[in-house]
Length: 265
Ligand code: SF4
Image 1 (tube, rainbow, N blue to C red):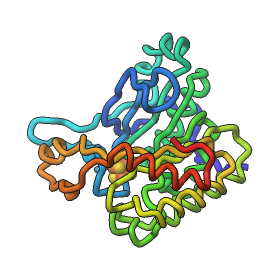
Image 2 (image 1 turned 30 degrees about the horizontal axis):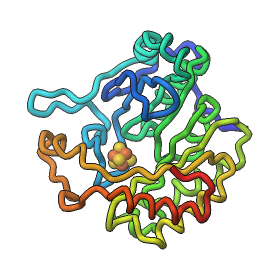
Image 3 (image 1 turned 180 degrees about the vertical axis):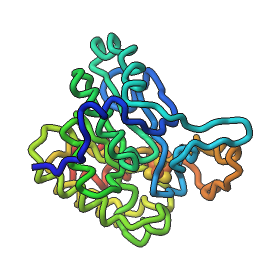
């Protein structure tokens, strides 16, 4: 049995949250044509974060730009419904991304539930960095969960992500106890010189091999797409000297993880 977050049906549609932006037509955040709703707020501080404007929980005003707006579940669903014909033909749907979507647990759950009840395919992009009670309350309304493991070594995780990884790994293991039929895809951003050592990748591979809902592991090459936003926000980008990995290096990294997990892309 899941522990449920207490919320009545009547108040669900009126539940509000802080949305950073809504992007239509993504083909990278789940199956088919996706409407991606980016939520504000993240308790982590990955040094390579490409959406630093998503990290703070409230609405930010910087140099004439506003980052975030308050929206209700129904406001978001109105936007989602506009794309419903594209979902039908492509197998797409709604993807909730962030920030960390679990930083707004009631809003996230209400949105996923509203989409689920309208038979909209749902995907989430998360780190699972939240109490298990929160994670388990949303998974009944999720078709595909993309969960990041940024780093397996806890000391490195604290240094580069700003927090302990114990809760993330524990929550991932606890999904083994769930009967829900969701797909689990573990994503690993490969940051050269930071988390691409053989020992680190072996650790991630061995861990993922224990996950019963796992469909595959996806290694994502480091990129620097967020650097302009750091300038706009007057924040220092600390990994300016790191270059994206070559395709040969990515192949090598995938080969290491593939020793433990059959499907690695
Ligand atoms: S978890 Fe995602 S949103 Fe949060 S700091 Fe890391 S990359 Fe940025």
